[in-house]
Length: 513
Image 1 (cartoon, rainbow, N blue to C red):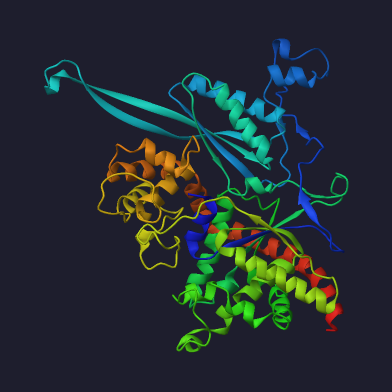
Image 2 (spheres, helix red, strand yellow; image 1 turned 90 degrees about the horizontal axis):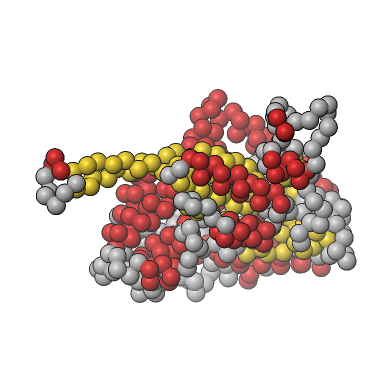
């Protein structure tokens, strides 16, 4: 299950991430791998004896340090996770050896690597008969302990990450198991500078990453005030627990930046009612069909202005920060196209002042409800069994997956149309599969299993994939009553207001306000 889908399931709120650059004039930007080698952080030991230290303060060459001393590491500029690699083995010696090998490989591929971080051990107990006579005294008990380590790549170029994983697979050490979770925004190159298309010149200014907890969007449906405040803090904690570094990005609540609402009103004066009426979001919120019209009986009475104008506020969220690239899923692609339309209409009316953002489409699969597999997994569902939260314990995750809705055919096959429940489980398993197999391939390999065995397999994969996030999430909320989260939000809101003020000064000048 992809992390962003899980984050959205935690609170019912979502976070919007945008990538911006200071763009006084409209210009086309694209993503390319930076040419400059990132700075090297020298983590070599200074008290090494014997041949590792010479007389005086002479420093060994980098090649000697990388070979004999601790692995050299690259410095991460933004701290955006690109890949989580879990290594496991029964032998601590083999495990530590391969962790060292993986860190050295990451250094030479220009990948900032962090770890290895010890993960909880997995203990399995076995009972084996000692003879052909099955008696209690003729049985012997064994205990097998699996040791695990986590290595995380941050700000990694997608191609370099895939090359790193392929290299480790090719040179896998005896008795070492590997499981890689490549983050869904890794192919978009987040954490890398957004480069200008100017004969391959290096970017003159660093990119900015904005992550907004969209609480103004949340109140388009009824909310309890206390619950909304708690949900905002939980969403902030979930973002940080999943690996977002507040030092490298801007995290803030949408309502903390008044410029979002101001620009929304200005854009609504030029937005098309026809385009808004064709949006699907307000129809799905009201449980209406896609072909529903505003002229239908009962629609006008049930539809609220805030829900109907939701895409205009979403456009303001993007345009107020002069975003150049916005990562979206398939369900939000229509809204980003509307944001581009709003920018073009405004520019035609008042001049070329707003930046028209580019769409970065995520390749992550859409995770469906466990109880209604034809609907997307969401916190807004009344059935708590329909979703998996990062706060769920392993037992709760197992219970929800065991009770997931399937069908009466007690076999495993991939058929999203006729068997949506089983296919959804295979989709989830594919996300956490160590070999990166497609759902159809997994269905073929599990053709001899029944549905109970499939659910157990999915449960085990999800628990292992989410390991560590839940603990970090709880620590952030409980440590000092969550004051660190309040500090992160306040600092992020300050930076966001400063950034949005530059855009609003241009917009006010253009419109005469």
